[in-house]
Length: 179
Image (cartoon, rainbow, N blue to C red; front, side, top):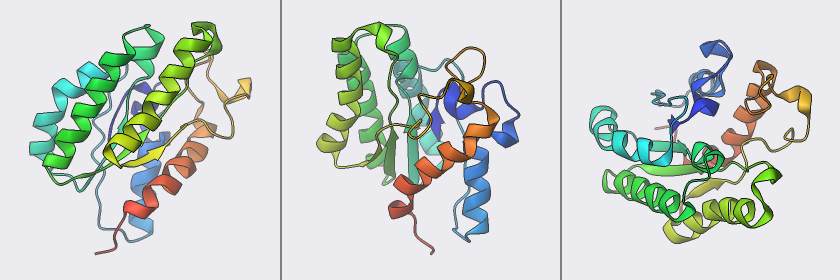
């Protein structure tokens, strides 16, 4: 698991985060996977790219979930650079024979329609380009509910983590093998 604060459990207890819940679900369903969560609050796609190689060597994952880009977008960074960083991360995972699930996020509308639409389209473009699994929007089903978020308006509450898990699970399930 490579992500930012949305996957690092920002503002909630670690065991309440959707990655911790995913680890529990994998175990309960008897899937032979252990989750290594290498998510860091504030991480950008360039930071994730710089850390990915050593993590791939250390953990030798069968599947890598990449949930990055939100901080690139919130900082107004180059979408071309974000796309290139995520693309390179996907390539590195593939070189290590790891499947990839890319998890998308959307930006608030105050960043302008052109930027937010191009940002969201980046994930779909990467899915098509690399033929990988994609969850288009991590917050599907609750994004418009202000009460679903912590005071900062960006990070989901502990109560929303199971919904995030369900969204990820649907996209991840086709990649999982029992043996």
